[in-house]
Length: 363
Ligand SMILES: NC(=O)C1=CN([C@@H]2O[C@H](COP(=O)(O)OP(=O)(O)OC[C@H]3O[C@@H](n4cnc5c(N)ncnc54)[C@H](O)[C@@H]3O)[C@@H](O)[C@H]2O)C=CC1
Ligand SMILES: CC(C)CC(=O)C(=O)O
Ligand SMILES: [Mg+2]
Image (cartoon, rainbow, N blue to C red; front, side, top):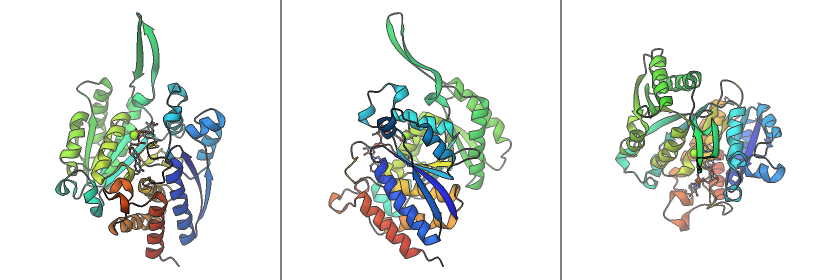
């Protein structure tokens, strides 16, 4: 099958983990006889350095013409002094908006063999399987006005949190649909005791719930949700929430699995190409050292194969290969105290490729 895949490596460890993904995609293409046409594009700091802005038109067109997009990460200290509108992160936010990627799915799945890497006790993490469904194109990261100004001799800074009923409804519906396909439990996370946008969110959830009688749903305030995620993560099946809450809760939830370097994500629109990326950032503290964990990105490739490319066997084979490698005790530095035995990004990718080759037989 012929598929066009855009890869946007971005900054910091982005190019390192995207190189791992490119190798794995190429191998899957070889094993399953797919013609993956991979084209790279500029985004974030890399695009600022090359053409002076974080989201080139050419990148938007490349993504729109592709079947799926894979992204590394953007940002880093080199660009931190730029004004907000010109920063690398603005490129990523702009791309999400341009592709209307309103639904960000962040699965938190436990690998039994990784239990020792989690700071939480075995009995707390055992069997955790939850999905954070984060609204991705609205809320505080997009609201206007966003500005600094002088008011009565004081410098003030303004961000705006806006949600329309329609924006809330489409993500909440997605949350209910996914809960229906899973264990039928949905927790909607908000801050309705304080925020007007959250009060509208709650109203919409209560209305949409009527269409999903088989889903048991409840509301939870975000501060409590942050605590419950470490106290008893097993209580959650699907969590649906707004942009910033989902951003923060998913970094927290990643530690249930043992590392931020493990969590993948899929960002989806109603139609059009999906974008797949690890939930972590550009990790400037380890960039260039060759030690980044590539598994969040490789699991994002598995999500791409499953969701957008409609290749469930290939997705399962890749997920199995990742599982296999972890079961065999291979760890990158973020997953082990034993730094001597830690694998580099390239070595970990080699192990996944070996496991793929060993476990896959396609005629
Ligand atoms: N999707 C994106 O492109 C995102 C970009 N960012 C940007 O990334 C930059 C750095 O942000 P931070 O707050 O440091 O968050 P970060 O997610 O880049 O890193 C947080 C910590 O996790 C570690 N880490 C992250 N990914 C890892 C991996 N694959 N393997 C091993 N360790 C890993 C890092 O070394 C660091 O200690 C900022 O410019 C930020 O805006 C942050 C989050 C998401
Ligand atoms: C630019 C940021 C909103 C990226 C981020 O932290 C994320 O999407 O998780
Ligand atoms: Mg984040």
